[in-house]
Length: 274
Image 1 (cartoon, rainbow, N blue to C red):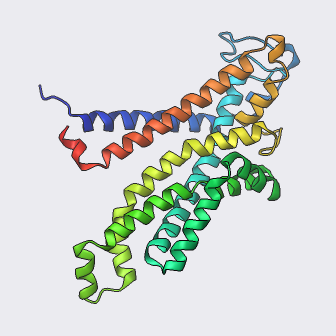
Image 2: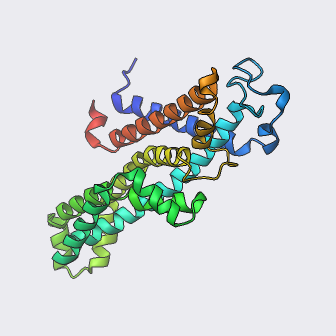
Image 3: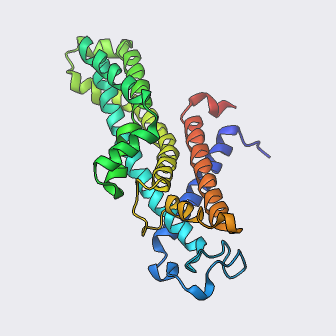
């Protein structure tokens, strides 16, 4: 029997993790609003077969709320990560191919953004732009592009010195043609891996800012809102509203982070020989 190499195992695990994440997101989106309505007859029930995560102080099923909250967090995370990755590619290429003052200005801007803690900066931007979905999306997008932009800049500087790029220039190819046919195809792996790796950071920042009261509105079923509400009752022995949704969030974040690492391994050619 032929031995399965490491790359094949990683591909299989990546497919499994992707299916799990899609299933969690789909469940959260498809759960009807009636499933998270409250009933004081079922309030503050601990985990059981009927309510696997228990119920909160208003009698709402915490498993249903957690799944819907994860769907909200994942939607914001996907949108913010995609926008941040696009900004990073644009900024990184501009720094690498632009004049010296453009490169210096972009590096200075990256230093400024990275010098402020992300959570504080997201809170300030979210509060200034009206909180809610729009504020969180703008805040997370504006603070998560810097590391990938520096990576893209360094990659473009290396690609510009390659022989095939010099040959294309001598053949009269325009900068736009070289960008489309030589630079962007080589930057695609960094773009997708960077997007995936930004995703867990975006989810955590959305949850932390909502937990502090500067993100989503209290009536929305977000994980940060659920955890914030649970703090009122944890001293009375209600541990499940804080522990179980929080643990689920951590597991999803770790799963996405591992998915990004596996995608990076898949895109490395030498891993196929292991």
